[in-house]
Length: 184
Image (tube, rainbow, N blue to C red):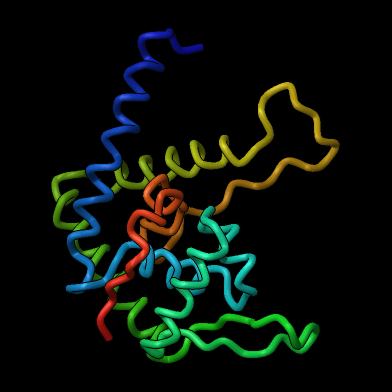
């Protein structure tokens, strides 16, 4: 088991990941917030869903998610259709324009990662992906010693679309930045 000092260094390094995320956010198209990019990526990865599920995945309040969904719909990036199982609910799905925007976001982010990690070996990049996936899965599992009686979740593959797909503190505090700025 690692020593206390190693866990403290790990905490510092994880804190520094915020600056990496901010730098990756700079490659988003002018006026496109990371919140909008994250919502598009989640819909691209998870498929059609209700707004409540999107709020859950973003780990933000339903009012924040509603504003984000309205913003994305106004730009033609997602469609809100009545849920056939419950006409009071809406199902969110990416439109062709939304999928194109998501592809652009993914391409820009992948190009920036390739530029920044160009001197890394392929093995180092794959190792980082595995370790980050494992770290994330470790936080998806119940706390050690806590038996829920359920099968432990399988680690999710590292998201192939946009690195901002996992909800962050930025999204939890999104009320402070509720004006989404993605220009169509």
